[in-house]
Length: 272
Image 1: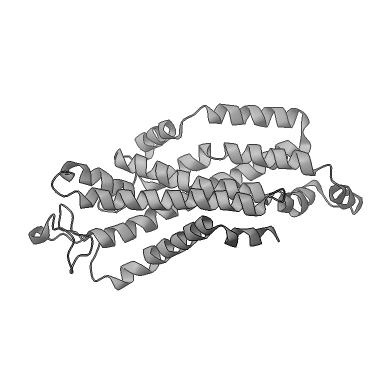
Image 2: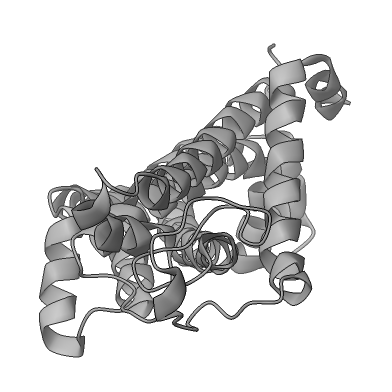
């Protein structure tokens, strides 16, 4: 089985382990920490890391570690939901284009070209001006523009697989086009889609961090890694830990998703 190749790649296993550890920490850790992410303590503002507060306190005396844990939960959740929505849209459009071909393929691929020309940040600015900045705006924006590469990958796989013998056999059995597309062809086309989605989650988290840093994403008092960076920039010289720590976690999370996606590409590619 191709997936057995992954354990031989130490760096890929390490990235998967790190991600699992961070996910566990983000969802379980807050219950084990005796602090609230929004609790202000004016007597402990900008305190450096200590035995009581392992990662120090921010400009409002809030515990940085617990805010990082909640921030990871929110940032990773936005990344998974945003890319999940984009993947579902991309699979449907790519499958229809690749399976039916002809003018349907031409129209849908030109639609892909149009959406590829729209930067996600511009769409977020537009949606934020209407709905107000929030994590939901980032998820919606990623769903609206992030599906294009998935659609292209899915289309390419459908163009390759729809001529295979198992598809002809399914037609002979009387299966409908929908059943052939999503019960037979899609199952065999999932490998590159999984790789694209895995790396796309990392890209979406990076987008969320950038947008929140600009003040257009998650709003205070909620904590995301990007919003923590935004709030910490004023205190970078006098309390660098409140900026370095969330920035370091962004780097680790995004890099881990990218490396894991690269490992999945190797493991799921039968030619390797």
